[in-house]
Length: 169
Ligand SMILES: CC(C)(COP(=O)(O)OP(=O)(O)OC[C@H]1O[C@@H](n2cnc3c(N)ncnc32)[C@H](O)[C@@H]1OP(=O)(O)O)[C@@H](O)C(=O)NCCC(=O)NCCS
Image 1: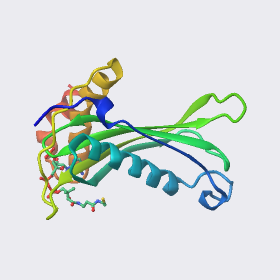
Image 2: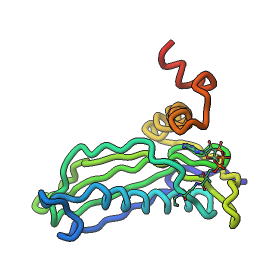
Image 3: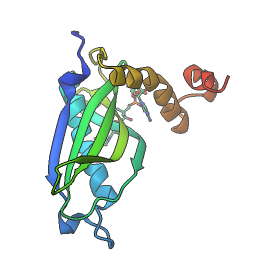
Image 4: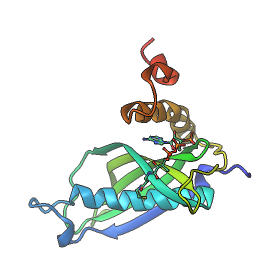
């Protein structure tokens, strides 16, 4: 299976925030943003492995700034590491200033997708080779985040989470 680079999976979605997608403060509803991020990251995962992919977990989401109605929002998703059948996807979200066009980072999230066959059984994915400094940094932390996610979902015994434990020793 041929290895891939993060750039091969890059997925960018740009869209408006409409009135029906907001909370009582006229800011983007969190669930709507999560859905858009899930969609972008599923496309990125699919581009990496060219298989059916399913969301296994949403590991970390930070809503750092409110996004007012009428904003132009850009979501960028990229595979940050591939394991056997699972892939970690980093999602960065920016809001665009109407007058200057300047972008402000408003949110980020980390999703895990698993490649599956038509029966839903996990299948192998290509290796990922990071290139830029940021891609290498995200790649290096991905095993630790995978172990944390597995421990929290009770799929891994904390004693086996070696990368995670190394943080505290
Ligand atoms: C995700 C799913 C395929 C995993 O199946 P499973 O029987 O648990 O399979 P495994 O235990 O072999 O796990 C498969 C991979 O997922 C990873 N994984 C499973 N749960 C995870 C979690 N909570 N966090 C991080 N990784 C996880 C495993 O570590 C393994 O990774 P690897 O093969 O790269 O080492 C299965 O739980 C599923 O189908 N869930 C429903 C998915 C869904 O409906 N999503 C929403 C709609 S798209």
